[in-house]
Each structure stands twice: as structure tokens, then as C-alpha cells.
Length: 203
Image (cartoon, rainbow, N blue to C red):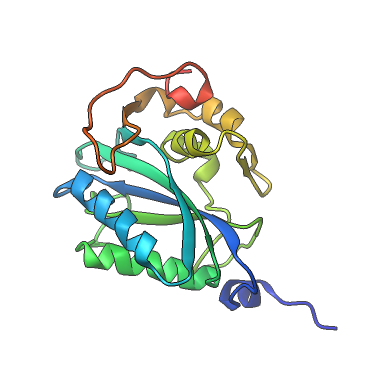
């Protein structure tokens, strides 16, 4: 029997729901409004369900050497389940970015909306179009800290993986993260004290 290759794994729809993690970020326009709309769009998307949304964080942008300064980002992580193929989930994220006028003129440039596929189940795939898990997820507190607030027992698969709480505690950018709200989808947003521990952004 022929085993499916990486590309087959990425293009084949799941027979049942598979857990996924998406990272959302925005630092142009009205980031809070954009992120709220993106979550609403994900809730309405066909093939996506069981959504959980992390608290909202404010983070400093990751800049390339010599890159112009940017506004801080608002970041959140969305956990859910999907019957979509991984590349179809990636395409859904790109459609959301396009709907909010994302421009891709510069790597790590400022953006109205960024949707990154972090994990799809426990897949470990290195493909030019979609690498799973996201190749820099294990380094980024703006992904790890919100993720562990949404799921304290989360584990990142792959060779750089491990308990997300431990990865968040080691992330170089953890001190640049500030929490803004736990009910940010409907409530007020303001700076909050960081909780103790690796998910707090200051551990």
C-alpha cells in the first residue's frame, strides 16, 4: 500500500474534525475591530467549529535589520476544529487577510491582518507552501503566551516542540508582551497586570 506523501496530507480533507491553532495579528488601521471581525468570520466559515479564543495581547513588532519602526501589534490565538484540508485552512486565512486589505509588499511589514496556521492536528510537514507546525512558532511569545492562556496543557508538535507553557517561558520576546483583555471580543480593552508564570509575558 502506498503511503501518502506530505503534499497528499496537506491537500486531503479530514474524515473527521481535526484540531488546529491559528495566530492572528494586526497593527494597521483599526486592529481591534479587524481582529473581532476576523474571529466572527472564522465562526461563520464552513468546515470550522469549536472555536476558543485567547486573551488579547499587545506586542512589539518583529523587525528585520534596518526596517522602519512600526506600531505595536494586537495578537490573539484561535483554537478550533476543522474538516478542511490544511491547505484549504491556509487559503481561508488568506481570504480573511485579503478581505481586510492585507498587502504583502514587505516581509515582516506592517499589516492590517495576519493569519498564520500554527498547527493542524499533530502534522509535521515541510512544504514550500505550508510548513507545519509553523517554523517560528516555538520562538514567538506572541503566539505561545496567548496559546497557553487558551489551553494551559497545549503541546507544540515537531522537533522544536514541547509544552507550550515551557516554550513561552523561554521566548526571547516574552517581556515585550502586555495583556489587554480576556473578554476583548465584546468588552472593554485596557492594559492588565501580567499573571504569574510563563503565560504572563514577564516570567
